[in-house]
Length: 341
Image (cartoon, rainbow, N blue to C red):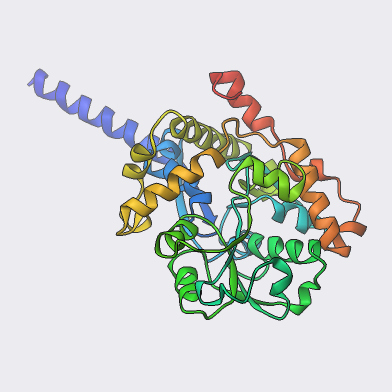
């Protein structure tokens, strides 16, 4: 009898502990600006590795068409955090909306301006995009910002080019192959997929490497990050630290494993049927992922400079870019684990 009561007490204790653990987990919704894009892989991989759970979070990832849609989800209250490009934080600061990035997972933006295989013969430079239809993930997204910057940098009026939302994955590839658009700003794995089918694919601008990023922007230019409203970050420091811990652990895992290991952890629906192409794209992308999680102040200044050049509203706003990000949560990871550089 005593033995049975002992077992029962043990079962009740285990149930109490598991219930307490579930209750202790904070529920967080992250809006992702296109989950299939390799630029957002760390956010998805963190869930696949169970890093959010380890950090005490019950995270729901909501996959949206582009970064602007993810931003709207947070501003509208249907999501807590954006997994998207840092440049939105700078752009919105001009509208007096305070957003703050707290962990950066992309050192480079990975944006690629590509000519449609159907229009290779007529487009040889960015100047040839005048009057053309160019695809972006969604109007108002980072792909759109990049396009406008490149057009203006090459002496074109951005208003003279038609911007078409085509998403980031299969829909973008299909629009390019069918010639529905003349060119597009794309990211991997979509770029590598197109290159696999069209060996003569024409690339007008590429920011997948440090060398190319410096050539385009004149400095480092951060891409994907987790961010939210400054008010939410301030009111949810425990959750923000937990999210940072999870992403930092994931970045460390990425840089200590092979591309094959990483692919094996990703959901089948994201990898797709052509695993070889996905693997090739992943190998191209791994150098893009941050090893530190920190925002480079010079990189943030570069984002502000780019937007100031392309947007009179941003140029006149007198933005203090240091308020659009914080490194304190990443620094705290370094203090407790020594994993950040």
